[in-house]
Image 1 (tube, one colour):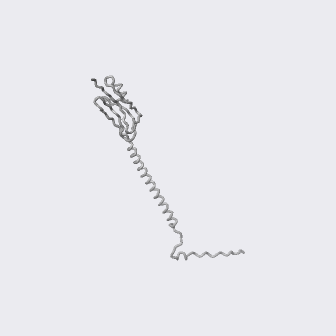
Image 2 (cartoon, one colour):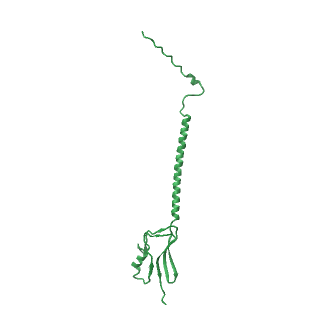
Image 3 (tube, helix red, strand yellow):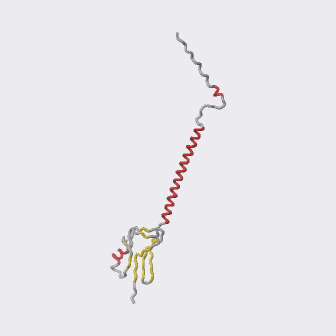
Length: 162
C-alpha cells in the first residue's frame, strides 16, 4: 500500500495587509526615483545654462576682437606741403595708431591707371615733357608705414634766377 504523504495546509492569505490603513505594497514613485529624476533635471538645466553662457561668451569675444582690430587701424593720407613759393611736396602720412601695410600702389593720370610707384610713373610718362626735377621716395607693395610716420613721395624745388 501506498504510504500517504501528509500535505502541508495552504498558507493563509495576507488578508490583514489589505485591511490596514497604510499600504505596504511597492509603488512606482518612491523617494529614490524622485531624487534621481530631480538630479537629472538639474543636470540638464545646468548643461543648457553652460551652453548659453558659451554662446554669449563667444559673441562677446567676437565684439572685443572687432573693437581691438578697429582701434589699431591705420589712417593713411596724402598731404601736400608748400614751405615757400619754390618748394612743393606730396607726403604719405599714417595718422592712425596701427601700422599701414601697402597692398597696392597705383597712379591715375589722364583717366588711365598706372600700377607702379610714382617714381616709375614719373620717369616713364612725365620726364619726357617736364623740365622740373623731382626728388622721390620709392613706395612699393609690401612696405609698412609705422604709425605717426610720413614718407615724402615726390618733392620739387625750383630755384629762382636773379
